[in-house]
Length: 318
Image (tube, rainbow, N blue to C red; front, side, top):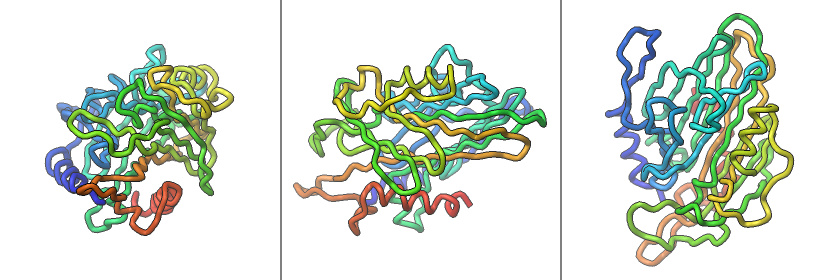
């Protein structure tokens, strides 16, 4: 079912937050949104940055519960944070601006070597109901040289298992679904209590969160600290997935971790992107009857959701 809230989010973001946070280099007073939408798909799949900078705090569900998305970058062997406050011993790259538009939130970062643009795009297009109903957000990194020299660059991205539980005591399991043309990771609760809760201050704890990368990428399901530490130190991920035994989120915080190698980046921008999606399988209890989401009405599953999202990426960006 297409949730009315998605249309409301489009209108709200378009009317109230269509502004740009300008950095000091532009000589104007910075606009500070109360909260920046990163993933704005529906009330459950809803991730925001409540801080002045994307690296000042963990990203959060709209109920303020941590729903961690983390991004790091290595430039010539030096690691820096782009999103999230961990690892604390890895310095944050300077954020120079943030722009909030109806379907995108765009962050700009810089240091002496490179400039980075990190864009979150949720294609809530009211004239394309199939696209509007997809519980899917694109994250795109664009990197270019700032000093005219080439620099070795790689990107780390992680989606936390926090997105798939109501409380951190719940246990999750992971998997690596096979979807042609992309690398995909999946996490969901072990017990899958479908549509069993009601009330306020709740997070979804059934269905599955997915992260998918098109093209060359290494990926692993593992503890957040181990994955972040390995990338910061070596540029690589730990060997071996933790996908078999149910594990509580508070026990090391399993994440869907990806590393994308951009090679030597010069003045010509180089970009990589991933999709973060949530398949709730059953979306609503309508007078005692379980109903599926609108995008599933013709029998589509998570693999087809990701496939359609990948095929539409270039068109939607344009």
